[in-house]
Length: 445
Image 1 (cartoon, rainbow, N blue to C red):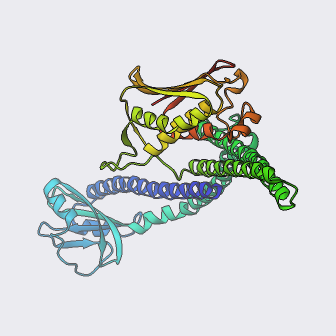
Image 2: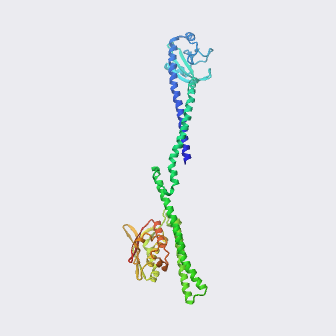
């Protein structure tokens, strides 16, 4: 970045200096043309006042005065006198300056002279006797003056270029230094001492950096929790299997141990499935799918009440085993959503409500439209969640009552999955709970 800024600044300076030099030369040349024209006009007036005929002009203008060439031309274009050429010259009636002098009294042009092999300035004026007096001057004399100053101009330009190079490096360093300091101190990046335009960029980097650190910590914590949670059922399975293998268990104990092995294995499989599901949701590989003909639609139009009623019917047996009554009320409520994800969300909420309920408890699932928005509410009469734990229940492996969770086969991942599905459907989730009275979770679509 520093090299690119420096290169562009030096290139800009170089182009500016060259352009300035070219413009200065053009202005100088135009100014000098005006000056030469003024001088030639004055000389022409002086010569015409002293010379009335070619003979007088030949006698009086015998030396080169100020590098001027004097020519006297007849009305028909015949050259009757030329101070630089003694021989006969071609007819000058077609010369531009001569034609202008005939028409307007004077004429001015620049042209290459074949007779003198050089570029000349020409000025012609019509005299009272009808003759055309023409004065010319070589352009080389003008460039000679400019060439004398060219060295000084180039020298000044080189000095300016070197100074600009040094300034360019300092300016580039002053521009880039705050960014380099920010890069060197990314862990404690601050908006102080940086450009105002970079503040949003810095804030974004800071937020992303914090998110990365938080994500790394969460992954580390997640790995530790996974290891711990998987270790418990595996230890149970291994211990019971070892007792059976060594013959230390009788027939009754074998059945009991087999039941415990089966229960731990089921909990292990459930946990693994939940972990895989969370990993898929985290990686973004699972998105709300659509089977609609509209390619822009990511989801299908589905009946939230019908999905809830179907999930409740499927969980009645589980609820009955736990001594819990589960009901579903409401009315048709259409939403855009992924059917399998919505059913998974409802099942996880209902499963938690049954798992952490009391004997003879109730679970009420309600679907309705409220304040113009579809709403799903799962309310139970269970053990409730303490205030200090309510913000953490959506974290992975967080359980309010770990012993109860193990006994009932809970993994502590259900609400984490719910949170992901809610986010994928751009919905909102609310939790209200009171210890000993129950929990109410509402999802707004």
